[in-house]
Length: 618
Image (cartoon, rainbow, N blue to C red):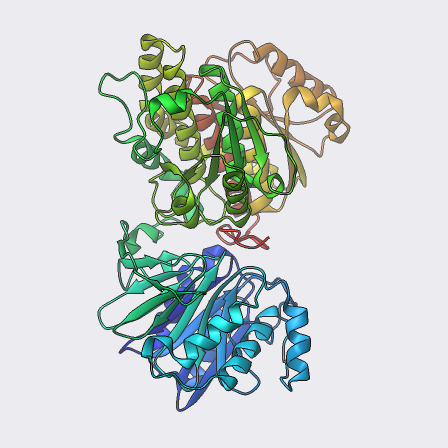
């Protein structure tokens, strides 16, 4: 969740690190800091708040060193204070450290170090790790092997004692111009530049300097110098690194005239959907194709149950996928919170194929759930957006979303692309079973029209902005839908909560009368997602129950829906579309409504309070 940037090279490190930290602001954080090696000591500046608050502090220090590291912190152990911000320096002044993750056994480590005379200035688990490295560093004789230096050995010895998760970057006073970095459960990426080396928790921080990267794996330790690097393991084994190329540029993560990244990414969705489906339909236009599943069609056909695991927005996409697979492929599907799955003793069916869904591919709960399923002997496929992510590497196969970087904390284009891939999976599995050729062709044509239908829905933006302006004074809202639109109601409520801080709940429309109706009043509007078909009259009945209790109704309806006169206080019309595409198109109005309400309330849309883009701690 926190952000890490480290640099070694010929240029002044501070400016490069600060720029990288700004690129990571979308991840969510509450304080920030930087350490540069210069004039024979660690020059450190730390500040609560945004990177902008840190910049004046760095100016005071006149940083000129060419080796350093920076951090944005999302508090776990200890309050949000300058003292608790990273980097931390050991009490003997020999080691500096930044850290993402949680060290679970830090209390026993701290007691040991206090007995050894080490002192502490913060409440963090990170400072404990820093001092333990210093303890081993003080005891370790200097090695003649440049790749197995005293510096690397002391980090390795410390991490063998660490329980929990970490992504760390370390500097040592006696090894200027070097960084040691290691990971377990928290992502780190090495950047290989021209006469410079970088490390970051997200490729966005370093892509402006290099597109050659190495994705560090759990249990690996990297030793970086300006012109070289080496990777070993916690057991001192050598690793042959694989250098990958980043396929997007820094321009893809710029605002390009939009007020917020969330706004930009909402309006990028037609292109994102086109990219997600490109090259993934058969030549005869009757089914979907996926190149990275690593499962033959015959093996796939042998599974009689699917299990989807995810968190937050991705779980809502899984719930829509569950509906579509059961509807079009007639195979039982179950969805579960990834955070709960690995702690439950759930009875599992033998012929079950697991899917995990995570935009970042680093969500710690989803990663843990995937590992638990694999531990039990099940194959796991991943749906994610970030090439080279931990989940993508550890899964047995999977599907990349290919929508480019998503910077806004509140997911938009990643979510609708997940809905599209879920619909394509339903088509793929259905065609293996009893879906006819003509039904497959019809569904493929419908999916191909999805980007244009989203473009039409986006034309409602000004109308929805006007609605948002009229509803910002309300502190509670309900979002209601049936069948595949119920998860979209959940997603709409989540979006509103995330970025406007207005309390909202999502329910199946029929469940409203089983409790939530007690909330209905003139002060609690309801957003209904309505489509034509067998559920139309039932949803209209629920709307009438709301109106009878003086509740306001905002209706998101397809074109063919003919609502009774005066039933809806506000009406948002979306184009008529195929059942598999409906959840995608219906998502657009709820995204826009949440966005414009947050803007009207002057919220920090791209960096909402207490949230992080990628949740990498439990």
